[in-house]
Image 1 (cartoon, one colour):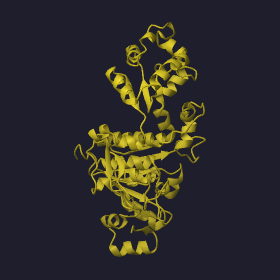
Image 2: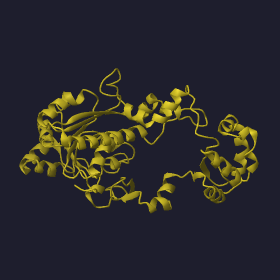
Image 3: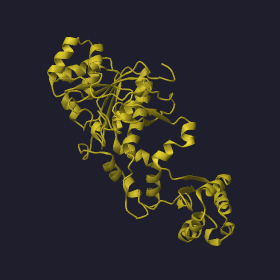
Length: 395
């Protein structure tokens, strides 16, 4: 155990699919845990077919599974279940993401697993939670964006609600689940038994939107913005976000763009006045900003200590000097992918380095044979299980 690999020596059995559960388990792997990803034979985790497919991986499955070992098992068969029980022996964490009730019907509910491994931390991830009228509904990120209010709050200038394309509900659920498992592992040192943790996209979506949700509730649905003018503006050659919060920043902005007379204009004299008259205010300053090239505007705003930044594409962001300066991105070589892929380095951990276990995104069943050997299966038994399609061995 070390700061570089605080979970070294821990064993995780990960049955989850998609994004939330797998990304949580990936964070455990990046922190040093031995994560055995158990996938169905004949296709594996369904994230492997989302979007463009490269061999056995996609842009969804790669960041969610680097650092894990993949084992493919047919859990519909009794022999496949016996294999999984062997893997669960001495495990510290068990992760599942089936719809409520499914994992129990397979025979691996919390009570069954805890009976064999009393100190296990058992994580269940679902869409709407384990109980209630929506519990068994299928759910993915866009559905929970709609349900939790995120989509309604994310109106564009066209006034139409829009889906946020970066799967924020899934990703936040993964992060909340990771912190819950990490805290449980810490507490388990002084506890005789493990525990079950229930995480849901619904809970994560609520947590992610805590500030906006509270503000909307208290203000009757119309959230008062932090300040005006703030938002996206168009310089002569680029779009830029400008954020003005404090009164001194409003004064500095006016001086920076050459409109000092607006500071004492009674229509804009304080935050409330600027908000009430924002259409008039924007009609004045937008043409002023539009007349400036971005490099000139950025220099003025930087000197005035005004928060701002150009609207970058992902490609532009990935190649900015600041990203390189803080080593934010690891460029990893993944089999069957024609070029290195950008994977964000994990906060608090060393950078991910190519050709190391932390950097490897496994193919379906790639580690089936080696993991089963570690758990007492002979080569003859492994070959027999593979021949009868109880397991699948990666090519």
